[in-house]
Length: 423
Image (cartoon, rainbow, N blue to C red; front, side, top):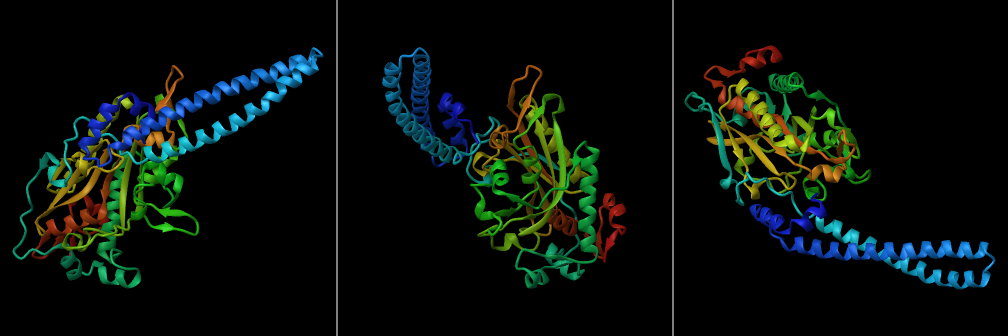
């Protein structure tokens, strides 16, 4: 969430950065500034009248102790007006604060100055390309056909049990899933991330803290009886570990990792591009989260991007890195890198990770601050990344490692799977 003081003091810059996102409601900025002026004026009046009321109360006490009862009673009679004015101004202030809050949460984060302007995925910037497309056998199959051929993933059985988008992994397919989870977690802990096990349901305050609410409630599964939400990513519970917390500057950066299932309604998703593992309602993911000093967050973003790329390189996958344009970034992000793996069987790029810097946007909602040696608390910067999401990694491995005799397992995974072929 943007800070109101920053909006008020940097109106032109805010409007300019929002235009990079192709934001459709720039008028909200002036509405927020107008409401803030009225709020500050009301606060000033309230403070002034409260000070007069306090002074009058003290004067009444002094006069009563001096035996000047009539004078005291005359002043006391005027305090009724003070109380009424204070009550009215307090109510007005509360209404203005609520209005202002409801407007501010509609503003997305401001894009960092390296973010290209644009409104669609076609305008994203390719910043790195690694490797070459796999050489596949003739009549190479997409992963959903490979899954059926080797009986390792059953999409129809998932439909029977739950519905579309909830596959059942079987035999070596299930073991490949588990192998990837352990591979990703082991690498994250070796890179200095502290592993956490976190709840898979969160309350509304947690959803608000990381920006899923009120922006994405339609994409989240909601348990209405208990008013809890199934997590769309481990980012939500892991980052909320630090909600309403002041950390020490010397403890930064804080690095956490967690494996969780993730749940997304993905309302409106249909078509050939969502076949098989390309788009699911439930999937597994290992997430990495960092809380950093504002001066170091973009250095950290580059570090996290390289870390995710190292996983793809170990898996031997051909990938590219995109810097997302303003219009394709998430609501809360200041800058995002997407990693996409080439699917030679589908002849398309598959997004397998997003790594984002949120600057103070989440921290302001979370009230997540750090205190330096001088004792002043300030907002931290938060970052997170998929390291990695499993469905499209599994799809990429199945498709890019297929041979005439079966599917080879990447060498780095063999010690985790216990087998080197799916046949």
